[in-house]
Image 1 (cartoon, rainbow, N blue to C red):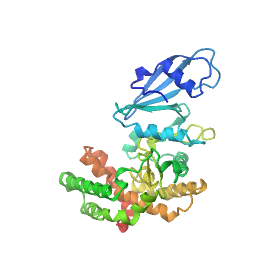
Image 2: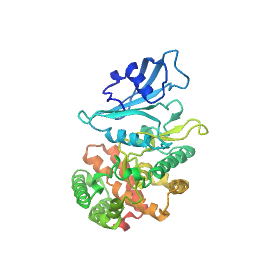
Image 3: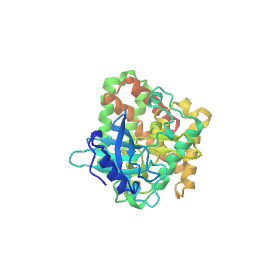
Image 4: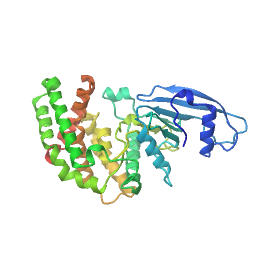
Length: 365
């Protein structure tokens, strides 16, 4: 592993030559120049890199690379996760091939260097489409995304390297005291929301959130404590799992679907990612059209089974999905309290509360 690259100006031919040699990707010759093409990434400094090699390099050197630089400690967990993944005998196939990464504890800066797959892959939907309420990929790409997610979860399902490894259980679920503190925080946020925006919500939505807050403490003893204490039926979750995080192949016969941006990877319930993917920005009509939501969950579950996950029933998956709907229906409340516009949080609230009702989540409280 190298030292942290703090900026794109530090991506020099000498640095990149050293990295590729250290990874066995450049056995002779060197890089003479690096063409840097900045990428307008949403929350990082990122660029596509085009190395210019000396004439004596062997065939097969990477023609394009991608680097992402994070600041303020946001990239620490992503670097740790990719390092863990590359130590496996067979690294997960749904992850973009990782080349190098480093994190500086003092400055909070990190970088991840990987192959650039933009020439062979594309996002199934754009962020603009998602926010406009048009976030349903075409059927083949939707299937590929669900299978890639299930493949990630199956690969890390109760994996022994997770118990004491760098991928951690989210803070609110490590012990009862932390969980109850999170419940109190959410209750305070809901109170603030009610004062500033509650007047525009119908009575039934206010009652839904009121009863949810009242019931949250019961979830710990009923469903959560034993799971996290035993690391039972847990896996690596992406935790920011929108369709914009997937890269679908231009030619599905040649390539598979990738899942990118693992900066919030954690050890958690796999249904977390499903709720992000399906219920957060899809309307009731989009979820139910031709049984789309049910088909996605079925495909996900069958992929888990085909990848060797045992002792996890269909009923377990449905319960976990409902639990995560209970937890994530608070997202638009948090968004509003933290300054998001009504155009952002209100459609999300409608999507999530519709799913909450459709799945009778209140019955678990």
